[in-house]
Length: 239
Image (cartoon, rainbow, N blue to C red; front, side):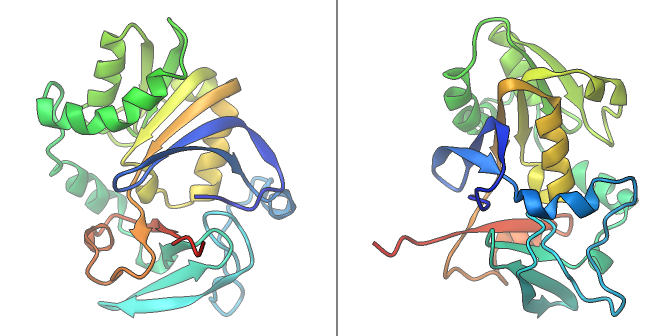
């Protein structure tokens, strides 16, 4: 997941795809930030209802990708993301009802092993007693519990289940965001916010699933989740 390197942000990001973990610098095009820094909510549409900018990187390189089950998807040539048109976003009530169906229990060994794919490389970057935030922790904050057991002080935030926004006024040595980014309605703004919550040289651990280039988007399980908004296509090396 590489967004064009124009403006470096202050953190390293851990990106977990289907099988691999990568540590990479994360950047957002500085030129596209300026028009959206004010209080007006960014919509990304022109007067005809056409998408103008990518919701992930704000690049003006967006084209219609496909329409499946009456839902329209767009693709960005800049960051290789595929995202759902905003008119098809689920309501908050439907989102919350869907999240409550997830079976992600604190203390479940199988789920803990799954989360260790993020915690293991992240722990190698942290110092004892670093304070962190689990952003989008869901109803059962399993990852935060695992990190608490390792001696780290964790705060929780989830817009549905832990909506205390006071935790978003502090700054953290690290932030975890597991199986959450794909739900962001405005990924650019959310990543920008997460960056603002990190201390200098802090770390952001993001766990999501990539679509392999050439794989079927229509049948992909991530696309079929009615609450998933965007995905990143992993590019196949031509070397």
